[in-house]
Each structure stands twice: as C-alpha cells, then as structure tokens.
Image (cartoon, rainbow, N blue to C red; front, top):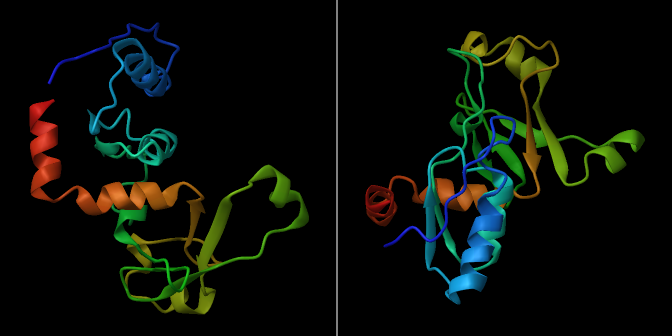
Length: 167
C-alpha cells in the first residue's frame, strides 16, 4: 500500500474535487488498476463514490456528512426500500416520491423528492426530532444514491474497517 499521488490545493478548492483526477492519473501513469480506494469524509461525496464504483473499484471512503441540525433525524436515520421506491422514517411511516413540476424536471434531473403524509407527521411522537414542516418530512434522493447506499451498507463490516485502518 503506497500513496501514488498527492496534491496541495489553495484554500478555495474543495478537497474532494481533484480526487478522481488523481485516481485516473495514477492509473494512467503507473498502469495499474486499484482494487479499492480509501479516503476520509471529505472524499465521500456521491459523485466520487459513484465514479469509483462504476469503474469497478471498491470505494472504502467515509461518507460525507452535511451539516444538518442537532437533535434532528438525518438522512441516515431513514431506510430506503428500492423495491417499493420509498423511504421509511424512524417511526415506521412511509415517505413516497412526489411528482415533479415542469420547471423542476430540467433543473433537478435525477433528483427525486420523497415526502411523508402531513397527517402522519402531525400525530407522530417523534415529530420534534424530525420536522417542523407543515407538509411533513421530506428527503431528496439523487440518482447516484444507490452507490452511496452500497458503501453505507459496508461501513460496519470487517473488510471496510481493515481498509480504513490501513490507509
């Protein structure tokens, strides 16, 4: 296990941006194809994870966690059911996909919004930890999210933990 590339960037460049360039440059320069790539949460974006996984390389990266509000359920507290195309909230209620309005289709291609019924949220005992929205709790799902889900399911496993310790 050796570091094949490194890059120092100015403060205005996000660390996650050049990750794929470094990976592909290493593949080209050294004529190798890695089995896996490891990285911390800065590199665990949906775009990076999807590109690496689509190239048949395992992405052993800690998933990027956006800010979020303290004491409010985050996306990771909801379970996605791909067969039914719904999210299940911590209280067991379903968040179903909404239809897109005409303007949203071009603007948010590949992004689906899921929302729980307002009536379910109003009577829920977990409402204070979930949402203050009168319409009910909502989540968005990017078209790349299936790759992130795959990495998320591996995070607690032994091979994943070994790969992160070795980096």
